[in-house]
Image (cartoon, rainbow, N blue to C red):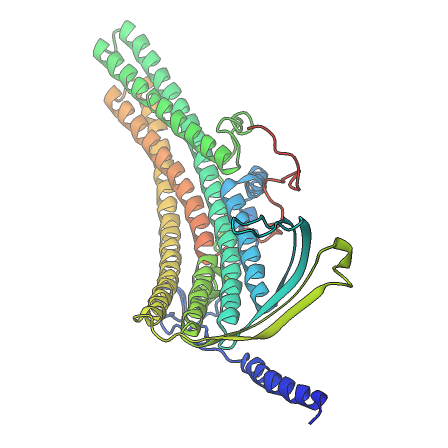
Length: 497
């Protein structure tokens, strides 16, 4: 057998096992993820007529149906400047980088090296001679590739991909919460403005009654006690204004912070009053199953469940043998120019097998940990679905009942307004007592204030329903742009701290 034939046989003996290992690289261990089907979803929302087919929920830019341009602009400002949104975008960038990092494990890695040394051997005490100083130059190249025999790296990539999906859903969930918070806080701010105006109007009307009573007391048809009672009621109504002003200021401050700016920025912008946002009702809510497609928190929980299912495969693969291919080549010479020609060259190449033999059950315990974590995220997914269904049901009931209550309050306020007007006319004519007038004015103020609060509640219930259905920002969000752009990151002289 010639040297060439012996070399060919040796090469085949080396390459065949390697090729066999590469073919085995398509193998994976651990459970494959399957999206769960939850049989607990009801066929329709409570209170919905089953005979009538449900229309899809109208979630795109739902806040525009409140017909308030100022609110639309505030939401745009909040999406652009909110700090929670900026944090969620940074998490997406982190997840993307982690995914690329995991994907790199499937490819070989290579490194180059170089060294230059100056050497000299000193004379010994037994009579040896010292050598002349000489230089030695070395250059090398090494590479390694871990064969993914049982899919540990592929499971890692799978988990990273699911993690990226979860980060994107987290951004959508943050936007959903943000839009809802801006809309509800804005409705409350406008509600406080309306209640402040009502309190001032009512106090002014009650003050007029007190002035009239003082005039009647001077004419002998009323007493000083009547004047005191009338003035006391006017002052009591005026006392509501400072607390309402404080609540309004807090709402404006919250809106400013939600847009990512200092608390006092929106004071002048919202100083001029506007009506309480009134939604167009009723709104279609679709069917309960739609909640799985629209709620980002539900979708994020499902992606996290998928992510931790893939991590079981990672932990399981650590219990199996691993094979890596390593190789290196190096050259050394006494002159730098000889590295490529008159130099000594060495090389090595071959597989390395690692088999876990004994680890006191640590690897098996790691698999059990991964399975327990997977179960926790599955339960969290089921809990998110139940929470979503509960949110929608609660919002539907609240909105439905508040509309009924608002209608009753409107009728009550109208009746009290008629009564206050009639009592005032009779009082001027001397045909009724001041007590009846004060009671009518107090009842009217209370009824009108309750009606305003009900209108605020209708707006906030409408907002809560859209949030519960999964309605958030559906515009473009650029998550690739970092908050901090670093400059001068290359090699340079260190500056003093």
